[in-house]
Length: 470
Image (cartoon, rainbow, N blue to C red; front, side):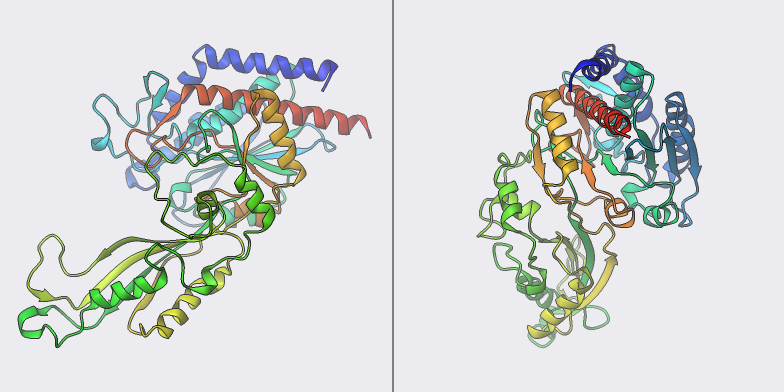
């Protein structure tokens, strides 16, 4: 990029630096964090709409976007905001996504001196609910566009925005909304931000996410509990049956034993991409002897499926009595990558349990496939374009992930809207996302703002080049 295009890029980066270094970013984020948009708690419901009407709409309208707020197509679902700034039919169109809802505040569990809905600085950390997930992330992206507009009084590409208020409760209605409004949301690429980077000081690009499906395993043998002295050895114990059933699903180190749950998508190219990643920084000690023995740790979490028992109970754990319970239950989850037949996940488990003699174990779905697994080819031109731009701005070659280890509503964009999907996260693994003391790092946020500003400036240059060639 040379000449006037480089001048615009530099001017946009200067505007972004000024915005951040002046304290305006911190002030704006404080206003967003102060809104207790807890979608998991009824007390948050009135704040879901006000976040859009009082915070997002004025910001976007000031940037020249036409905005509209929609009722969720699913009754009880959170409202959805769309915005568009269309500058030319021949220009590339970028769709951006964010969510303004947060998980429960958990006020009583935060460190002394911190409140989830008051932005608090401590050194390089900004504490508050939504700082990492997801208010700072979409604020950074919107302000990167603002810096570009300040530099040239235009974006020089078309931008569309979707901000939902129900991601933390499964993005209720978002897929149906995208299906209904597919024409209005038509774009060339999704560029969005959520989740953590692999390393705090190096940008990450990921192009999809693992899916997740939840279910209960239940053993219901009889009504009530029966004296363990009178009936021990005479009555089958549901908890023991359930424990053995669970033990058949993986071996002693967690390696999946259900054949249909072992994906076929860990190709040589994906293994090469994962091999280039740094050691995983998780904030907690990892267990190298857990999971698939033949895989690296990166392959286990980004390229493979994982089964977890989230909770299990039988009888009354807090007040056990000398009795054999009549029931036992385990809440379970499978995280899965592309290459897994979603429709066969639970049927395959049923066949597996029956084959191992556990016909009395019931499978009770508790969550649909919700956020299905998605993955864009890591060699897609948009991936290369974004990675090159981020490296030019930050001086760091970004870490490339084929998919996030967690789940996102990326299928709404990758499958429903048929878009290439580029995710550039602006938090890090130790941010306490979904936990007390959630925070972001100021140096990371500043680097992220500059990286996104440079990326949008490069897309503007791409748009100007395409328009000039017509």
